[in-house]
Image (cartoon, rainbow, N blue to C red):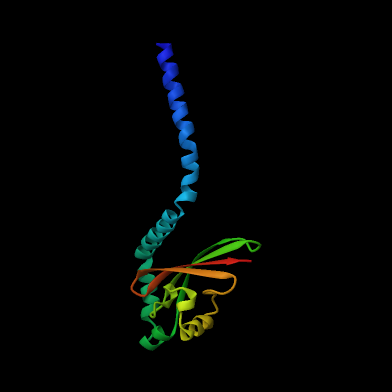
Length: 144
């Protein structure tokens, strides 16, 4: 039955060729899904390493915890002539790190500025997601 085999092979090849555009378009069309995947990965990472962060925060007095934003470096990607991304775990009792820039209080911005980190400005945009308690996964994207 060589004729039947030829038809089956053509059918399989045609099906594969029809699927290629969908496979290539998936990451672009479903970008929000990728954002959710990053959040889940951050949640897993935090779950397995949270004890070392708890130790650092537990050493601070309650007054210090309330008056500071504690930043733990979680990585970096990109190169200076383009967009760079910094990834942090942030301890913020106020929770304002997760708010859009325009909704953050002046006091919080002053506190964040004292940490010498860019939480948002003309070149940088911050996205934060609450992981647990006062801990947030933060991505800072800066265009240079």
